[in-house]
Image 1 (tube, helix red, strand yellow):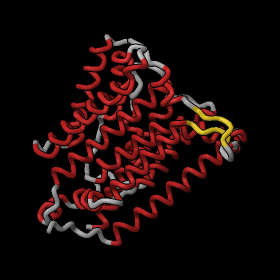
Image 2 (tube, rainbow, N blue to C red):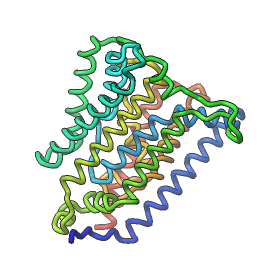
Image 3 (cartoon, rainbow, N blue to C red):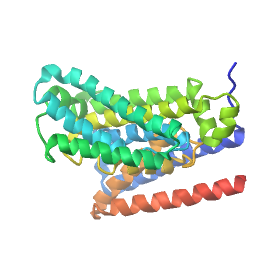
Length: 327
C-alpha cells in the first residue's frame, strides 16, 4: 500500500492562520473602499466586485496547486490571452459552435499543462524557466495566429459567461453568472486538495520531494496534475475575461504575477508545502480590493506593478526567513 508522508501540525497550523489573515486583509481593504465610496456596501455592487474579481480568484486557485508542489506557473496569462483570441477567431460570431470551441479551448489548455508538467517532472527543468519558455511560446503563437490584432467576433452566448447578471434576486439583488463559476471552481479546487489523497501528496512533494519519493508518493504525476489544474484555471479565467471585456491581445497580460501575489498574500509558502484554497481565494480578493482602492483614490494604474513587486519581494524574504528558522 502506498504511504504518504504525514504533514505535521506545525505545517497545518500556519495554513489556518494564513487563511484567517487573508480574510482580515480583505475585510480591512474593502472597509476602506466602502468608507470612501459607501455605495460599495450595497449587495448589488459587492456582487459586481466579485464578478470583476472572478478571473483572478480562479487563477489564484490554479496557481496554488503548482505552488504547493514547489513550483511556479508563469504561462497562465499567456494561456488566458490565447483563449480569448482563439475563441474569437474560431467562433467568429457563430453561436452554434460556441460550446464545441470551448471544449477545444480546454483541450488546448490541458495540452499546455501537460507540456509544462512533463518538462518539469521528467526533464528536471526548473518550473520558472519551463513556464517562462511556455509563456513566450504561447504568446508568440497567439499573436501570430491573430496577426497581432483582435480578429473575429464573440457571440452573445459566449459573452454571457462573463457578463450575464440575473436581477431581482432576493437578498443580493443581482447574481452574476461569473460568481456561480467562482463557487463551482473553488469547490472543485477545494475538493481536489481536501477530499482526495492528492492534497496530502502535493503538500508532501512541496515540503520535501525526495522524502515523498522515498515514501512511495508519485512525485512526477503529482506535479504534472498540478500544472494541468493551473492550465484549466487559466482557460476558465480567459473565457470569463473574453465574456466580460471582449477581444484583446493583452487580455491576460500580467495575470500570472497577480495570481502568485494573491497566493502569497493569502499565506502560501512560495517554496511549497503550505497553503490552502481559502487562503488563495481571500488573497486574490484582497489583491483585487487593493487595486480597486487605488482606483478609488485616483492613483495611477502603473502603481499596481510596483505594489505587486513589493509584495513578491517581501514574500520571498519571509519564506526564506521562515525556512531558516525551521532548519
